[in-house]
Length: 485
Ligand code: HEM
Image (tube, rainbow, N blue to C red; front, top):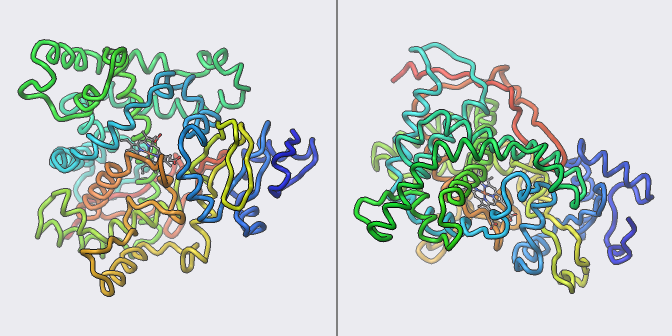
């Protein structure tokens, strides 16, 4: 529909009523190309593309990205923005959007406890790889990468979230994995319907009630036990486990302090954690097997650090090459063409510093992938250079006083030119855990296994649907236990 208030913002693609509707349809297949075209065509840093029923405004200039990231929720809403592409109310549950207190729990208690809980995370990584890969001595084995990684990530994440023995219960684990997949698949379908129809079609399309029932059956008794203990002995009872259930209980109020409400929080934290981290690690495996020259330097680094410092969270800070490799993999092969989708919810609209105004109801996002592939941000931007950030950090360390100055080129550091986790007020609160988990997993893999691509030198093509870019779900990677140990 024509929106005169957006007239000042140039359009990529067609401008006519029917032709732009057709563009909205084509968006499902070629959104990344369309956004790249706008990025190149409009270096001023703002343009719009047609979606079915509205214009999506895309910003690419770092100044505008910063302004989007810094806007408060009552002006640019993260939740309303997400809801458009992924109807969380229908496919996850209404309270997750209406009272997202778990985000605070993840940002504070979960992150603070990563140090203390690292030995468990490390133990689960070693056990999970051993049991999931099931390798015979010195035999190469082809394994479906995404499926294998999800099995490991689900276990490792749940060692932190709910602990032993539940984190190894296959019914519980695969329900979490299944829920994550269902949310994405059913969410994409429900999102095709206009807002007023979504509550009606949601229950027929989404499998959330089934997943919730299994979660209640498997996790419910543990949560009930915690609530009972707290009622009997108070909030700081002796021997209280240091896990997500306890951290959530510290923040949950009133109707959130029930078994179903807490089970839903753990289930949705699993959704936020498993899918994203599994895709990131799978992409890293594809990058490693396509650029195998990175394996030995990372192996040497990990072995050296572990020999000197042991397996601790602090030791991961010394694994600069591994950190750099994962950051580079996310730069080139992150989860989407754009990041930071927001809806303008303020009655006054949203005004950029150059005077451009987005009226209430507009959608805006950052051109993450195009920014990551821009030569003015990265030298040889399309080239996978696993250690580029490690080199930059070393160069910076050689010329600066590091007690005064933190150089932000680590996996967890967000910036206007690095957006896999977004940046600003809603930057992913789980990224500290994600980076710890993925670095420890990569260090374990390079120390213990040799890896090969299924077809030498060929990177499996990504799956592209709308704005989403995900690793090829059927592609395999070949693993072998190291023979030189
Ligand atoms: C490599 C792994 C991960 C990636 C790439 C990732 C990426 C993202 C992105 C792009 C956002 C939205 C940022 C924005 O729009 O500004 C986000 C938000 C979020 N992520 Fe992650 N994430 C990852 C892992 C995790 C993990 C492990 C957890 C939980 C432990 C988590 C929990 C969340 C939550 C709760 C939000 C909503 C934040 C808010 O509303 O303020 N994520 N993540």
